[in-house]
Length: 245
Image (cartoon, rainbow, N blue to C red; front, top):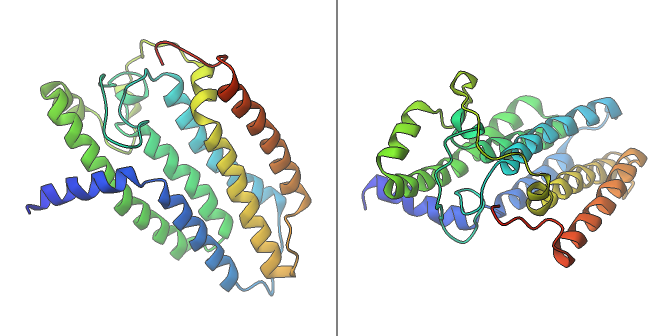
C-alpha cells in the first residue's frame, strides 16, 4: 500500500475513534500526577484559573466556529467523512482546521495544569500532532475528491493549523447561540470535569485527600447544573432547533 493511501486509511480509522484520545490523555495525566514530587508543592488558585482560561480559549474557538457553521459540513460528523458544503469564509478563511486548533488549546490548558512544563508539553504536542495529522490528512483527501479545484484553491491560500488573519473573509451566516448550545455543551462539561478530576488526583497524591479543593467543587457544581439544564432543553424541547444548522 502506498504511503499516501496508508495515511488516508489510518486517518479515517482514527477519525471514527477520535473520542478515545481524551481518555488516553486523562489517564496519562493521572499517571503524571501520581509520580510527581510534592515535597515543596503549593497550590495557587490563580495559576489553576489561568490554565482553565487557556482551555476556555480553545472552547471559544470551537464556539465561534460552530456558531457560524451550517449543517452537513466537515468536522462535526463522527461515523464517516461528510460534507455537502465547503467552508471557505469566516474562520475557515484564516485556518483550515479551527475545530482541531480549538481542541489543541483545550488540552494544552489541561497539560499545563499538570505543571511538568517542558517534557510534558513536548510530549503532548507530539501525541496530538501525530494523532490529528492523520485525521486532517484523511479529511482533506475527502474534501479534495469531493470539491476538486475549489478545495485546492482554498487549501493553497489557507494555512492548515496556524491562522493567518490577513486572509480574513467575512462569513455569510450570522452567529447562532442555539447551534452552540445544541452542539457544544458536552465540550464545556468535559473541560470542567477534566480539571476537577485532575485537581482531585493532585489532592489525593499530595495530601491523601480523595476530593477536590473547594474552588473546583464550586466551579464543577456550577458547570454540572448548567450542563444538565442545557442538555435537558436540547433533548426534551425544540428550543435549539435550526433548519439551516
